[in-house]
Image (cartoon, rainbow, N blue to C red; front, side, top):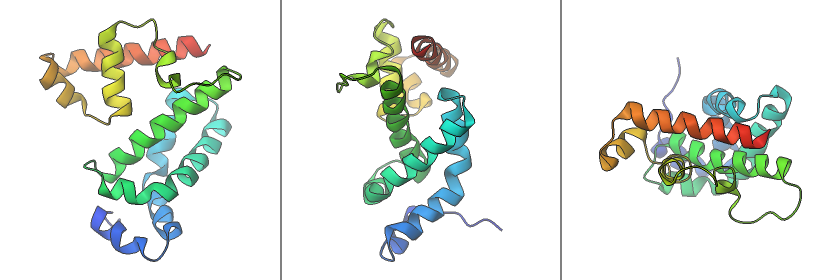
Length: 157
């Protein structure tokens, strides 16, 4: 029977060391994050390596995740997105990395596309929230997101 992992459980476990909490998170969320990584990095071996890198880089930041207003999985996903995009940028752009790498793959996209991408992928907002604040419906926000992902893939190729 699968135990629900809540922030309270994780906070209690954090005192035993980051490693045990990281193992709990890995056991619970690695499959979902791996599937997510594959959307950007279709090579399974590279995606698996990136998954391990994500968990090793996020382990020291676990307290930030528990203090976040986001759920544990949403926090992991937001932080993972940053690492995935950084990885893709480093792989495709040799040298000269700047702080704008998150948006460099969408520099030719319309402002609305950039806004949707930034809010969803970097700020951890939900599609429903964006739909409500923009006056657009959920299907429209989802369409914009798909278009952003297509642009990113195209710019990586």
